[in-house]
Structure formats: structure tokens, C-alpha cells
Length: 218
Image 1 (cartoon, one colour):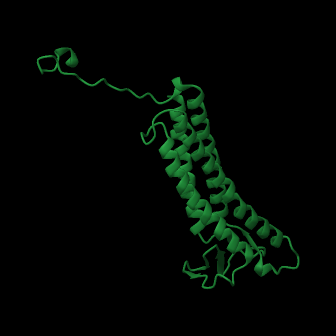
Image 2 (cartoon, one colour; image 1 turned 30 degrees about the vertical axis):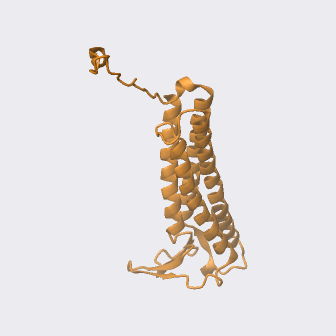
């Protein structure tokens, strides 16, 4: 029962991380305007993401524009798009694999094969977390490097946006959840007594006179 609890907990963490990764991919707040002057009152704030850029006025009005040309984007944005979308799709595959090998499902008969399927699903989730870290850290490195570059004008300096922090948290959940799923599958394969209990009832057999014996109902 302990290994099944590990798998369920790991699957829940992976699902939360998957939703967070989708949210980070769609939000336009990968880069946020940096305010370096002493004037607190600003006319507008600029957000930049993987799919669009937004301008928020001091009055609260926000206007967003989707990137129309893919080839006109920078190399880091194109790579971040591909890696993030790939991580999201790989997490979907990992979900089906994990559910197939989970102890709480009956898609595969209990045994070493079922444990290996669950172990594969957990490893795929951990790989999703590592894959999502690549564009996040790459983007963060570019933002920090340009922020401290004296050649970049103050008006073009940006700070780390909320989407990056959401993506880092989602990556951590995916890796932790995948590790828990792998631990649960490994414990189940090595110690079957800790696996999810499955009870089977013997079929009732009719007596010689064609009627079911009364002891089948006791």
C-alpha cells in the first residue's frame, strides 16, 4: 500500500507541474520592463513572452500583440517555443504511460511488467522537468546578462517575469513527482507486499442438482 501511495502522490505532483508548465508557456510575462530610475510613476509596462508582447498602461488598459512572423523571432524565443511545447506533449505521453502502469489501475496485470511501465512513466516525467528547465534557464541568463550590460540602453532593460518563476516551480514538481513515481514502482517490484492490494473472489459453482450451494453465500 505504501508504494501505491507514493505513485499517487507523485502523479498528483506531476499533474500540478504539467498545468503550471502550460501556464508558463502561455503567459506573456517572461520578460518585464525594469524600472531603474527614481520615478515611481510610469506611463506603461511592457511584457514579453513566447507568443505575444503586451503593453500595460498606467490607467490599467492592456494591449497585446501576437508575434506574426516566426522567422523574425530571435533564436532563443524559437528554441524556447520548441522545447516548452515538446515538454508539454511529452508530459501528456508520460501521463498515459504512468496511468497504464499505476497500481490503482487494471490496464496491465500486476507484476514486474506493470512496475516497469510505471517506472518508465516516472522517468518520462523527470525528463519533462529537465527539458523545461533548458529554455527557462536560457531565457533567464539572457535577461540577466542584458540587464547588467552597460551597452544596453536603460529603456531596453528587462527583469525576470512571473512566467519564469512559475516554470521553475512546475519543473521542480515534475521532477519530484516523477521521482516519487519511480520510487513507488521500484518498491513495488522489489517488495510485492507493499503493492496495492488486489482481492479476487472465487467463482461460485453449482451443486450436483443444478442449484448453487448455500455455502457460497456465507
